[in-house]
Length: 148
Ligand code: SF4
Image (cartoon, rainbow, N blue to C red; front, top):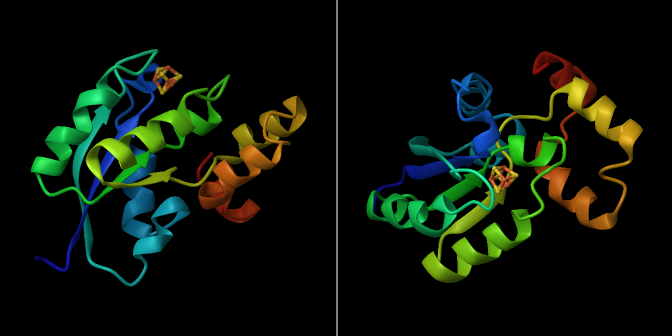
């Protein structure tokens, strides 16, 4: 078994035209939810979308990811910061873990400050549940501004 951690990313389909710049940059810099690979060799080997509500591709994409050696699936930060955030995040996480035995991390790049500000005004992430969800991508203000 290789020492390189192979990573797959599933993004929210509402951002399906996204070129992935923030995710790849954060991966390169080991920022946001990718800081878990700070002292690890890791590479992104798969990138896809959920295929739109209710996220049908989440049922199948991890199977192909697993065949290609993916060990950790990241649910992209867009699922957390969208208006509204994806209501299915926990289900996706549990499903992928139970069905495919893959580790699932919620988040990719740090939350951009503009989303942080708006969701703070909306009170979106006030609950203990959401506080836990945003933890890997919260970062500090300096980093959040850098991802605006
Ligand atoms: S809100 Fe959730 S299910 Fe809907 S498109 Fe986004 S990630 Fe997929």
